[in-house]
Length: 459
Image 1 (cartoon, rainbow, N blue to C red):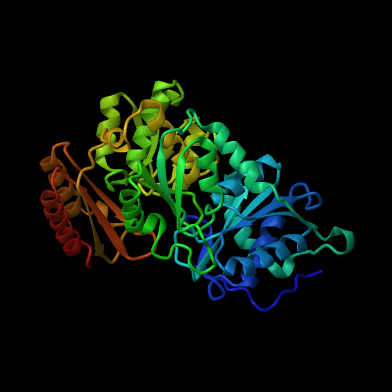
Image 2 (tube, rainbow, N blue to C red):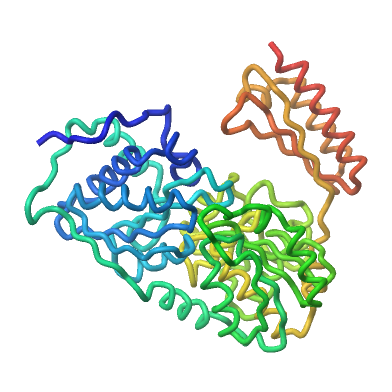
């Protein structure tokens, strides 16, 4: 039979962005779209072996619209014949982990990560808890558009739903068991962003041996990321100094990223966290090929620090999916982004803020050194970003006048900084990023390049 449904499904130019499907819940991301997307995913994943026996793990963050979208996703999956294991409110990496542990064919996380509460999103994981490659996303999207051709099971062929009450315990046990050193002696403030890690993260760190002060750990469905978490660090900084803690950790709404602050309230970003972990892993013989993976947006200070330590750095395009692809392709052990997505493939298949915080604190406890001292291995260069409107964002970098200006700027910096031109993924802009020894030089260089680009790319 042809597929029915509650009204037409919106069909934007591309459903999938860099991290799943995302939009304003019940406006852009409707229950109808969520149901169709889930059914399409089940169809695509079951195409080879048939949907009979296909299993999907479904989790969400605590935002209110997640309840609605969870129901729609479960309906879509079961309507295509897939069995569903609902794990409730858990971090994104926990859903990925459980997808692998339960040998499920598909994982679905309903979250808009660091976005404000009105937004929501759907992230999909393949078997093993891995992010989907582009060709699978394309196939799912095509199924959504061709839904009139779907065939639906009836009777006993309709999928069934079960609950997994111990999902959080399984995740906690896995993480605590991964810690290379007890956290005894550390006092940490944890800002849970009123998000998916509100219950499980403080418990994991307490089991690890730390004294934990949890803030913004009372989600009500509406307060996720609201003036808190990794996008709003001021409350965490204040709490760290007020409680005289050794450090503070901040997650985003689905806890796949982490930023930290030291005892003095200074921010420790993803680049610095990666440097601390890279040195620890190299010392323990666990940094495969003595190599770290980072994106082109990582600060030059990270590159200089790794070079000084004899650690190679492989660069990828911006986006944690590209970091993950490189880690898998090259069999490497550590990678991430300046924004705080850090991936430890020995323990997780995606960025995991809770795991990263655990290993960061383990390094502090093992060495007896403060976070400020450990993070000081990276001296961050001042970074300036200027957005320049242009007619053709992809052609600008190859224009002779622009190429000459970039070459001149790089010669002037003489290895003490760098220039990066990058077309915006969503707007007709070229992003000009300059790092230099001083903020004044960085700003002046960025402004000069922007002027050249503006003149050359306006036609």
